[in-house]
Image (cartoon, rainbow, N blue to C red; front, side, top):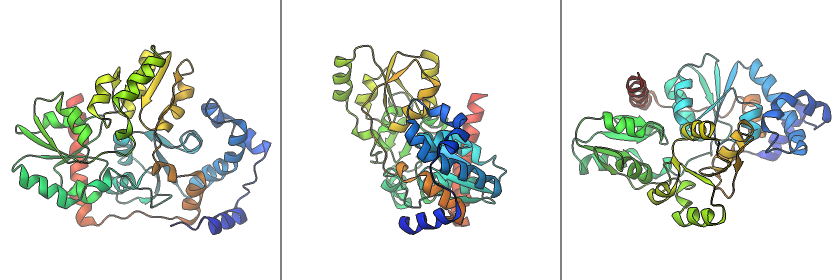
Length: 349
């Protein structure tokens, strides 16, 4: 666990982190991207960290990859690349900087290391885990293989390197149906998200069987929530992530990955939208879509929120915490992720 009191003392000795109007003005261009969701007072507090991080990452030859669920100060203030799991996985193969700082959860940092093993990969808080990734192990994959002999295993990228290595191929919510349809045989095993698997099964020509895992954020949504909100706001467009239960997906106007949701919103520009996904998603795209009123409530991922500006600065300052993957696990895990990328690119061609 990070010793935040001592970290703050050391950072204060090395960087000018006093909030001032001058620092806020120096970052005004970045603030403009998030002005709808961050107050001027909040940005004034963030600006010293934004300035320090952006300067330090240049000195360290570092690039910051940030998931769409990061807080707006990270997403708009310091990220070099933003995206969903698939976009970040692909970008990790292209990074030329010596250091990758992964603003996301641990399995994402592992994926970046797997795909770009010569780079130094840092995660600002090593305890930023994932309820879905922790729901399955390599032993669980072996259990599914024994239950369904010969069936290929498609594992969500929201898994550990060990699970990826035990799988035939990976998928994301953006390409899960593509990947399943590309598999040989009539039966496909999907791990670990039962809801993603069930939503894919409803569209697939294959028999899809699944591991009984779920995302702690998306499984909280219910069809009753959607109906209650529609009763109060009849014009709202309900948009669900495919990690939501099938009954929620059935009530939605659109279902898609984080990148798919963003594309749909840009295309359709509903007057009001309710996103059945992680809270920061709406905050991060609000300024791109000023005509859309993003409704609340939403659910927060406590693991994603462990990553803060303060921890990013400390990670770059102290070059910690580095993510390592055993080469014996990294090689088969890389093959599973690369197969996903290859199938996705081939089927889009």
